[in-house]
Image 1 (cartoon, helix red, strand yellow):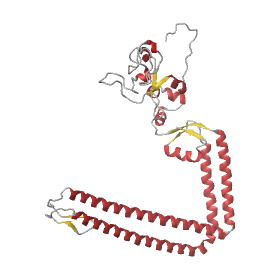
Image 2 (cartoon, rainbow, N blue to C red):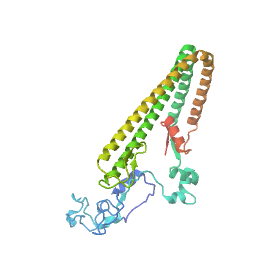
Image 3 (cartoon, rainbow, N blue to C red):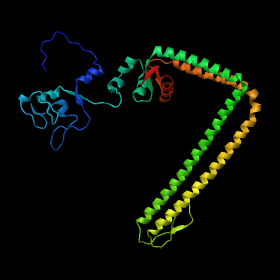
Length: 346
């Protein structure tokens, strides 16, 4: 393209959408040329389908040659028939996994991006290297609605506590249910830990047996150089000097089955002990209710104070959100969970 006559030139920053329109295709491979054929690799950095043919008026596969096929895209190789000089003009693009910034605009002195965003280079590097998040937008309308919703929620929670306290028995029953729920959760946790331990021991036993079986299978018909046994059993599976045979696999299988049965019995006994202990704790809770009647009133007030303090802290976090504010990853996730519709950060 030659531009000889013009009246004005405008220089401006192009949007990502405009830049994408300049691209003739995406480069998905790091290769340049094939060192056997000396032809550009398809979808590589010199790809003819993206940047144009290497030979004038000829597609990559040679199906279309000469200028009479100008503008035709080969249905076999996908290369447009055009002069080779278009390779100097056409551009491709690479789709990145995440946004990046050129090091010149970050490390330069002064930092161009730092000046544009009014952020110190140290903080800017933390954002670029994913050590921190930066708030890019705060929706004021959404924040106002969130503040109103938060205040209504606080009033509703306090009113709910007062209503619950009006009937002492109802409060005690709720507390009893909560504590019973905690006991149930503790029981389930102990059961899960027990099941996990038993499963680990079972897996360990099976893996050990399989390793021994593998060792024996590679030495069938040979004399054992040493006695072999499983770690949980005193029974020797094979004696030193004994000829190794397939029968030893059956001995190992029997020992593994005995071990698994033993672990199952142990699991059943421990689960029964857990159930008995939790049942005794439930009975103890029921006997304590009479002494907790007076303590409950004070506990309700303390609970209301804690709720006010927590809700006020959350409200302060919401009010302090502002653009260009830096957040650690944990802090970002915490705020995004509560106020994700109010701000945008990246």
